[in-house]
Image 1 (tube, rainbow, N blue to C red):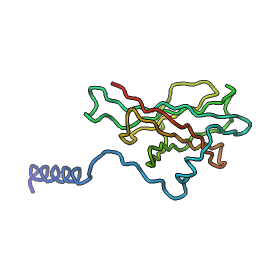
Image 2 (cartoon, helix red, strand yellow):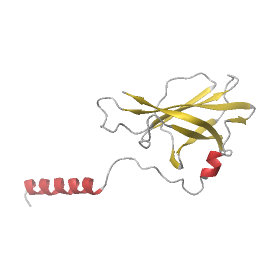
Image 3 (tube, rainbow, N blue to C red):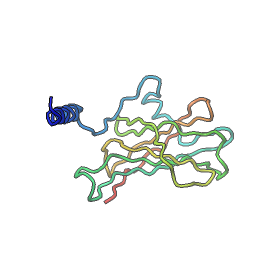
Image 4 (cartoon, rainbow, N blue to C red):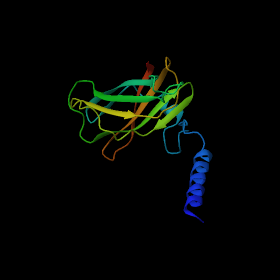
Length: 168
């Protein structure tokens, strides 16, 4: 086989593989076994006490519709802030491990991104999750974060009635 034919064959194979892979739009995953049920997520408290600290959840959710975005906008982005209600330092070893966004019986379950975040005070833990579903904007959802201290148990913290904003 000549080098030109080989290049054409490889190019066709790559394009076929890309075409067969299906759409790249993120799907809303079903909660896998071992994770909290929909009922447990809905019953999660709006405040938890861990290691003597009262923690609350703040969120900012949005979809980007800037001119460089696709006509139907970019997928959901969620920034969550776990805040010590008394503005004291967070418990050592506290981590936010999982995020669930609940919209009318549908749940987006995801891990957080490892990207660097803007520095926050010692009483705030901030995390971001990207590539969510294309829900909203202009709707309200519930947000639940799974918290853990070290290798301890997973604790759920919920923020109900959170707005999905739109950036233009």
